[in-house]
Image (tube, rainbow, N blue to C red):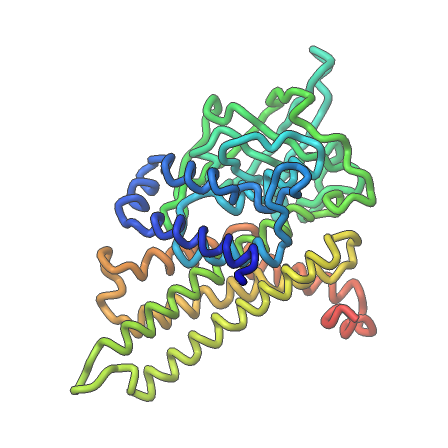
Length: 379
């Protein structure tokens, strides 16, 4: 008997297959919102995947949710699915109404931050100010969930414990947002808020020190894990395409897959894909186990390692795939670029590999040599 996750992934695969249409992806890159595709995804409950069943959601674990996001990555789905899944879970977890429709997400960190102050003018609201340099999908949707604090952000963009609130900003369409696209053509925007008015019912209560989301960078870590899962899925498809091409392309009377040099390249590509997939799974299990309940939980190290490893692998996977495909892999007509460009774009979102490598290094240095084994193993 198929499990609930099997049924969900089967349904998701049928929905995501529609996203592979080159015309649809080109339309999104040109600024068109894929309304029909989003409606189908929303009708099947995927945006509520991480919201508990008691609150009307699907109630997936992070291990299960990353399986869905990995599948989305393997179809190059041009939707803010990861952002909406995380955003709606944040709102539900902090007592806010997730509502319907898509969400952008500004988790803050690595230079992006938002501050919150009471609006003394009307006495029943807040003002939010801050800057997100490149917020994915903030140029296409009207709502964004972000992390804000009444206290100044630290040097790395994280907030002091006990000062964090989750905020939902509506009316993005009324803002001037310098629009850009990432390497894949997915829309992004620079988001600058200057004492932007927020109603009180769009701001969570201050998160207590013991709350999982009150930890510095807790939301950023979740986003980094989601993006890593999507990268793992894109790598899955790149490997499949490369194997298919190598088996079908002939040189000197035999498939190039039979040449030792090509076999070595494909083996290296497959190894990178396998390592990233394992790192994402380990990070998802760690997040489910610890829920970031403590700042020293293994989830932080596991997620940082997964995103860093995915970023490192993205460069190598894209390079090897295009080498094996040769000139045809660089053409617009071939599907390969739709995945390799996403890998390049996603590599820099939610922190790039250097950002996360430095984060891991800082944690190891702070813990000291005697704690290295414990940090690596979670023992």
